[in-house]
Length: 275
Picture (cartoon, one colour):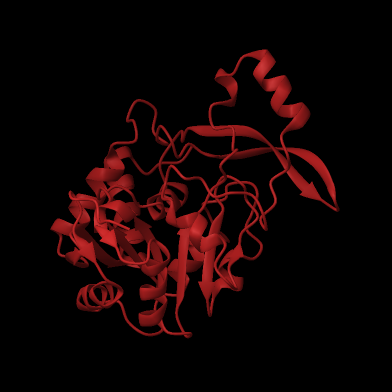
């Protein structure tokens, strides 16, 4: 295979060196956001990124990613009646064991989903996939309603004093901030609902899932751009470590610190009186 001329050649040993320099180490619980292409041309392909991380985390550590679901109907209410009818008639149910991860967020989530020993949580839109010592606990009993709040893998990541790792993505690409949106005490949060076919006792059943709006933001008129602002200000306040993995910019920070910072930012900016 020929290395694409526009990409730098990156090996597993270089990845491990760069990740270790950033602060990745044994026993950590890590949530990863990554653009594989941004790293460079990786000798051995995307699997090597996962292997490099697991080598450093050791069997005592855990690697988690946001998987979501390829067929989640995010814009359901904008669909034509014909499209809605076809989806309801024939879309296979969400199955944590087989349903594809959403490629939009990262192709690596599907690689991790199919990794030996991987565990997948059962909320179709907020689904997480994890490998390692805490994988089962992180993904078990994921609430169907308000799946970014208490009891979610994101809440558990904070409980474990875990980390968020970003490689080659924008600062605002932090799913954990949706947990902060859930717990922050701000008024009139926007709510999003969508129908989802689930697998229960071998049968397809339809469930309406409700959560705070993670797409357009929980505050009416604010949009979702504040996620980027929170992440940038978190870095500017001196939290976490910045560096490079391959040729991609990278950031490593503590999940609980980020969550506390984001909750305080949201309450300070949008008010703290809940109706």
